[in-house]
Image (tube, rainbow over all chains, first blue to last red; front, top):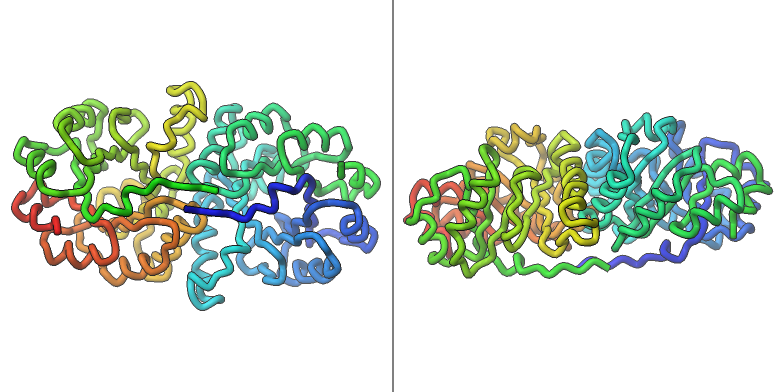
Length: 233
Length: 233
């Protein structure tokens, strides 16, 4: 019997902050006071433990959960509330779809002094399906993005039924995705909760994807704080 | 919440029959009447749907569960009680550690007319860690077998904590493995039940591995029926 405490099922809106970007006081204030449900700290490039800790310090007054999405095993700051660990289901490489995680478990065993001493309750797997071939994450992880709707759903169902992954994350990173794809995935999940990310920069786009998923809003907070606030329904 | 019905937790001894081998009347009789708890039908090479169906027909009077371990998507006979689907955690190739399964889900969707119509209750994932580099399965699936005990356990813990796999299968295929490895894996599993296979051809070897795992007994049934019977404790 596997049981999860699943606070993320109640989140409508998550803000993604990149430790490698300029997280100004204005941005931090807008995020902490704007009504988002959780803050996900992560990025694809240029991530160091120092930057992760700097951003954590800026968020010290947060009353909402702080989630670290570790980009690599070294950049893990244990003071975050959860580790949202990406596993890229449609990567062609074993490394991104399990290999890195096995290696990480081995290093955590050493850090914590035993496999059973790892804080498993803080570790939450996000099964990513990355669908924008132009996104940095798709290139780095060598994703297959040329997929039919059924093939996309097959990836999500694998994460759901085979991996019992707490989260399936449909990621269009930088581009607004196809709502029909997101709906088809949502309709076929049983255990997993759905996250959607990519191109949400207006109230209308937030409303469309919120019908099916917790929306992850990232880039717009750096581009236009006013528009960012409109994505919080 | 994920819940499994887990009859396999009560099995002490499973007999593995290979559809590509000569399953004589004497062998079938010894297996059906000898006291094994379940029959796992599978092999690595030369498997066809016809051979799988032939062996199923020979087992039609079985009172114990019949498990099909599909070698490839085409060779699936739906009259078996369960599909025990291997996923090779220490393969270097994404295909054997998820890719084939995603593709299989897509074809099952077509066969059954919907992802939700697939008989999920019959599908049981076996997370294999293959540790004998000379075994055909290790070569075919390009396994990394040169692993420390901690690295082996890390693979098992990935299957357990990340994949919530119902079964972890330590496979030495053709060789008797290291009981210390099997014990270390057993000590670190929380959700997953442990299977052990490889080189069990005597009562003594059966007793050693039965302390930690459900034992899978295969080749000896073809080599020496008398010795096979001794492995059933």
